[in-house]
Length: 278
Image (cartoon, rainbow, N blue to C red):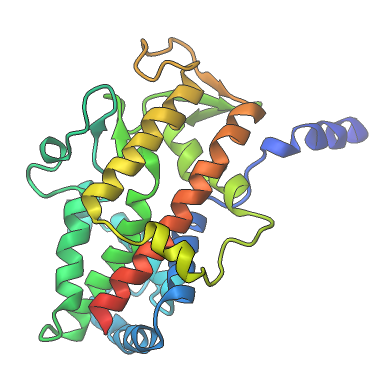
């Protein structure tokens, strides 16, 4: 029986998850940014990190940019203080209609609007260090969020949270969790190593634009890859009555897009941090 269980584990190992985007993806975006931002911006960021005790979140570390990248998720556990920030992590832009960011973000409580808001706060050197540090943490996290396609596209299912899936042989997931976590490990692990200094030409190809452009780009990935792979090619078809199966072919077809968006997120975040912290 023991030998059988070992063989069974090896058989299904290609679809087994390791680390999740919830930490792994955000930290990877942040580490790419740190590798590509200017020395002046890195020094300025380190100075702001000294103000971490003033935020009053001792259980949510702020020792380095990796910690900073997941702080906005960590504080959600304190609903009394931070519950109002939950809607800042995503924007439900309907993939079955023409792209319309304005309607999805009418009140400013969406990820793209909060990137702009926190960039402005971080850039304001007249503000206290702890206020700018909070803005830094939100900015780093939200740039990661907007480059996860299912934080940008939706088909009336909360960004895939209501679309049940079986990942390989593992039931109990949904499409959002697959892209937010399980697929990220496959996309970001291994060679070529994703955290590196990108060439000027590589940066120039993706660094320009604003949150509107980045929103539409990731909405398009959601529309053209994330949902079609789960919905047998029809992203706007009827909601399946049973969990959809995400198999090895779906993983192979999707991971390059996820990896590309993480790289783009890191490069674009480096640009924003250079501008805000110079």
